[in-house]
Amino acid sequence: MAVLVGKRAPNFSEKAVINGEEIVDSFSLDQYLGKKYVILFFYPKDFTFVCPTELHAFQSRLAEFESKNVAIVACSTDTEQSHWGWLQMSKDHGGIQGVTYPIVADTNKTVATNYDVLDGHYEYNDEGELVAVGELVCNRGLFFIDKNGIVQHQLVNSDPLGRNVDEAMRIVDAWQHFEKHGQVCPANWRSGEEAMSGTHEGVANYLASH
Image 1: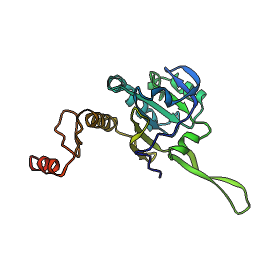
Image 2: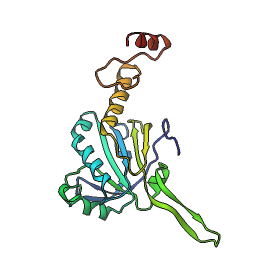
Image 3: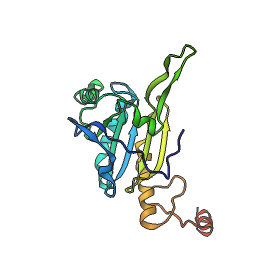
Image 4: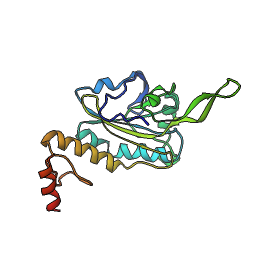
């Protein structure tokens, strides 16, 4: 598993569905550089079970993320037509109608590969034939990218394990607190709680008061 924290987020230009209905040919994270933070999350498949719960969960908090200047972007290896079709299906029928943030179509699997969240790989068998090992779909990867395009947080779950949007929000709050105040955030820190200076004395004082 590649660790991208502290490194520039791999760039891409791919087809995507935006605003819940419009297909665009060249969606890129470059549009956010210097302007917005980004949460980019990968999910395995359209028209499945855990995936729509995650997409709706991020949509339900979208206004809150946007108030913190964070763009939400989803990605899977399905086609843009598959994304579009799923977006037309109501929530009651397992669809994601109402989701408005961009959904990237990583049909060639290059985005998932560059972020190292592709579950499965190609190899050659004893007869020299190219075969796929495992399903070539995304694990549940999530990357928090700062306004300079640097990955500051990553988390990757196996397919059965849905993510916690509260934790994604906590990471945003913690990073923005650090940027604004220069204070580091201890275990289980939440917005509004006491943080600490990044020194041994600061740590000792914090631990002594808790």
